[in-house]
Image (cartoon, rainbow over all chains, first blue to last red; front, side, top):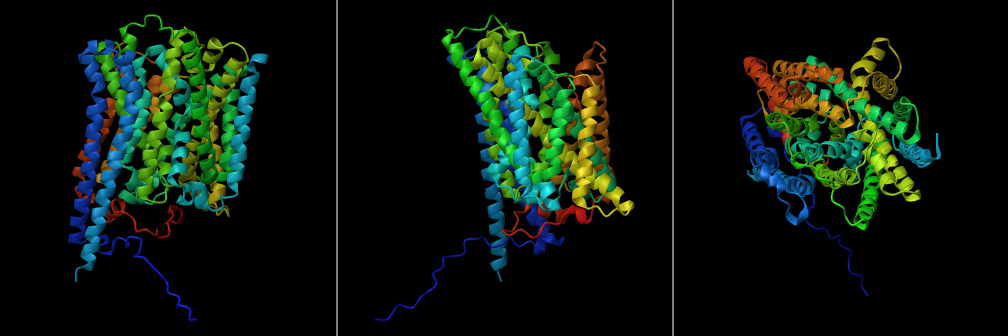
Length: 122
Length: 509
């Protein structure tokens, strides 16, 4: 009875290869372009999130100032200002945070992919 | 001292003992200078978020909001909203790059970005000013609380909090304080959640009475005095949304994350923890109205409410619990601020001074000397200056941070053309404008015109002014853009390799 020979079983490497920063660390023209595109993408997702914050939350004092009658409405028996400012605003802020987090990590992943494909090119 | 004060004294003693025990236990993990400053950058997002929440929910959140809502109504809901939304702004513009900068403190970041010792010193001055300004209302709140619940003289609170903070900072530094603060978040949440649950049940049992007619003004989410109220509301929004990123104890927490992604995820968990907490204080403010409470001051409403609504041992027990939460709030925020201020004082004042004298003492000893100064000065201040109310006092610290560190961080991270001259000019502008406002507000001078409102809520004009000065002066000194700007921005914005290279501590400079 012959024992089967032991083999080492390995999967594909789990860890993403380290982002190559050597080139872009030098002040090369290519580095400027890569950095510019990443910064623009990250700034854009940040600005979009903050715009939603300004529209969704920042507009409320002005809204109630222009339409004081709104403060008298009471959906579900709770006056509207209390419902909006005391309760609903917090889930809204969390969802905005999650929206941003996903966008920012997606940007970083595609940036890492860009550098990787650049590395693999001859 | 009467029998009434027994639950409060028990509660305060237990919180103090728990804090010291956990702090000493954490000491076993604190070995290096890096442990003391940034817990060796190895705190996981869940634990770190609890610690941030525990540190951030100060006396202003715990006592102040319920009292302000009780007195002034819905417009005061902007305080907790701003304190939460500030973390969203921090998350989108600052969190990951700040962590990736690899600096220990805000002054480290400024020096690294702008290669200027002058800007660094200015930032150190600001960290210490904001930290002390923020510590003042915490300590005064402790004085008021102990006076009310235990009949102690006003000075006992500040001195007790100062001593406990000093002992825990002294012994364990950042590593042990992380455990203490994570514990204190959950303690504070419990200390509001249980009373809110019980008191709402009592209210429902009483047939859910509506508050006496409150008038429309109480439900309006901006002030009552027409456009002045609208200005004050927007100014508060500007100060809190933009000031959070510049608070010294908030900034230092980001350096304890392992990497930029973890910094972001931590911030998202913080948003959830803060949102859960801030649902509670307004409920107590409303109940205060329903039961027509007449608290000694707005800040003591939630300490008096349980006994008002629920006589007997149950009311006593709830008072004790609220008291424990309040004390946890004083201790955690004060420790966080003391750590941040000590870090800056030791790097920029104590270490250079010791070195000049050829002293053999190293980083940890310097940190301990600095923490002594960092705690003693605000304790003295709390004993000597009048209280402006916990939440309003804290709002001034936010305005100062918003007009100085907010432009520095945002332009430093996102704008390549920032120069040291521009940053310095903008910081000085913010310091002078909001500093004047702080002195006038604390001093209590009033002119009886619109100037009062502009000075008690300076953020709406002071923040844009600082941004403008920083940008204009930077453009005028365009030849002084630091040569390493692009390289540094690459580091701030690119995801780090999965295995971190050894951190380069600023102390080695």
